[in-house]
Each structure stands twice: as structure tokens, then as C-alpha cells.
Amino acid sequence: MKKKYILDREDKVTDQRLFTKRREIIAGILSAPFVLNTSNLFGKGENYLSFKKDMQYSTNEQTNTIKQITSYNNFYELGSGKRDPLINADKLNTENWKLTVDGLVENPITIDTEDLITKFSLEERIYRLRCVEAWSMVIPWIGFELNQLIKKAKPLASAKFVAFQSILDRDNLPGQRRNTLNWPYREGLRLDEAMNPLTIISVGLYGRVLPNQNGSPVRLVVPWKYGFKSIKSIVKISLVSDEPKTSWNEQSPNEYGFYSNVNPNVAHPRWSQRRERRIGEFKKRDTEIFNGYAKYVSFLYKNMDLKKYF
Ligand code: MTE
View (spheres, rainbow, N blue to C red):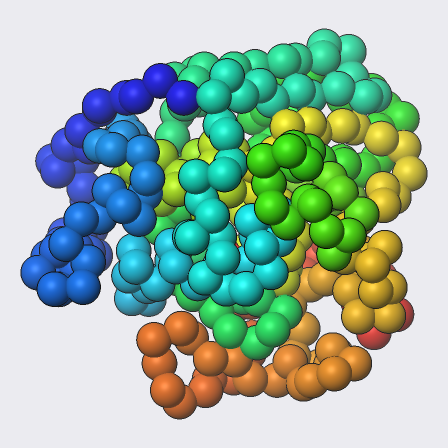
């Protein structure tokens, strides 16, 4: 990826309290002896992005630190341990990355990811990410609503679902040399879920382009669903008529459903989902239905039995 050096202007910040808190956190990180160089965490030098702050959908909870967000990850292409994605981050080659939107559309698109950054107006959305393993983080994502990209492609009436596919690069991605999953990683949403304004395509976090371990250069963030729906390093988005196959559902259908809505009332077969541990905290907290986003999304499931469609 070409380097971009656009500095976010402080005077764009409207919520001073949040901003001050963020500055304190960043100052804390910079002064911490064990993280002297944040560019190691991002791995891409000084790639700042220009963005607006979202006030409608962002949570005002304290964000996790850059160090937590970039060193405790799930990214099986880079290994199955939580530290592996940071350690193997440079194995993901993001040069000349293209994202394709195809399938049941009038206007298929192939776009250079550099253009995504310049053609869409970027917002910072502070969202909770709740993992099925019962931990959570609060992350200042930078991105745009997926519905903007889908609208550009003009879906046909027959399009009912959206299928996502990550990079396939067995030569360089250490995790893809093993059959942990049926590669490439695939995910899916119903079209109305994909069009919901909460669903974003993220290209950055903490003011800079995405670190490789967080799914550079483009990933999905669906904040009311378990983290595994938020597919990383996407190369293809296809509009389709039937529910698409998804990696984790294919791997263990009784553990990972297609919907995967955060739901404290439906236990994972091996553990409860009632409580969660925010990374960096000791005391567990109660898990909220739809990860706290019920007022924006519960209508999507109003006639569905969420125990059956877990
Ligand atoms: N996307 C791909 N391509 N490969 C993965 O292994 N892991 C998922 C999701 N997206 C994964 C992926 C899981 S299980 C989680 S919890 C989130 O990414 C973690 O995102 P983060 O590391 O940025 O917090």
C-alpha cells in the first residue's frame, strides 16, 4: 500500500471529553516503557487517516489501548494463538490490494483499496467487539457504512444475502498451510443486516490505517454479532440469492450459527455467554443482548426464534 500522511485535525473533534480521554490514553501508551514505538504495532509507519467523528452510533465507554487491540487478536491465517497475528503480521502482503463487489449486481466493482480511503468519507466509530470466547474490547474503528459500497454496485432484486471472502495466499500465510479452516475464510450476512447503518467496512483504527493483524487493508465490523463475523482482509464481496457458507459454521455447525448475534441467553455448547471479560479488566460484566445495540437491530429478527437461529 502506498503511504498516506493525512493528519486528522483536532478542531474537527466535537466531543472534547472523549478526545481528552483518548489523548490521555495515547500519552499513557507513549510514555509506557514497553511500547516505545507505536509504529511497530501498526507496522506501516505514519499512516494517518482523515475522518469525522461519529456521535450517533459510537459508545462513550473507555477504548482499549492500541497495545491491547493490536496484540491480542484472532486471525487464523496468521496463526491460531492470540499473539501469532502480531508476530506474523508481516506475512500478510497488502500491496496492490483490490476489493471486488460482484454477483447479483447491475454494476460490478473492482476497487483499489487506496481508492476506498479517498472515495468514501471516513468516520470514526467507537464500537464494542464481543468475541464468542467471552472477551470484549472497545475499538475506535475508522471506516464507512457497507451500504454505501453495496448501493454503488446496484443489487438486483434477486440478491438476498452478502458473501464475503478473505485473502487466499498459502505461500505466505502460515495459518493457511494447515487445515484449521477450509480456506479462504468466508463470512455472510443477510442483505438487510449488511445494509444496516451499524455495519461498516473498516480501513483503520486509532486514527491510522489498519494494522495487518487487525485485517488490513479492509475488514468488516458488525458490532452486534460475535467477532468472528467481522471478517478481515477482504478481497471479495458477492451479492447472492441463498444463505452463503461461512467458515466457522462449516467447521462446527453446532457451535457457530449463521446469525451469531451476541446473545446472553444462548450458551455456546462449551461455555455460557452470560458474562464477558473486557480485556484489561478483572471483574466480569454481564453480556448485553445484541452486544448493547438492540435498539438499532432487534427489528431485524422480530419473527425469528433466536435459539433456533443462533
Ligand atoms: N477474519 C479472518 N480472515 N480470519 C480470522 O481468523 N477471526 C475473527 C474475525 N475476523 C478472523 C477474521 C474473529 S474470531 C474475531 S474475534 C475478530 O476477527 C477479531 O478481530 P480483532 O483481532 O481485530 O480484534
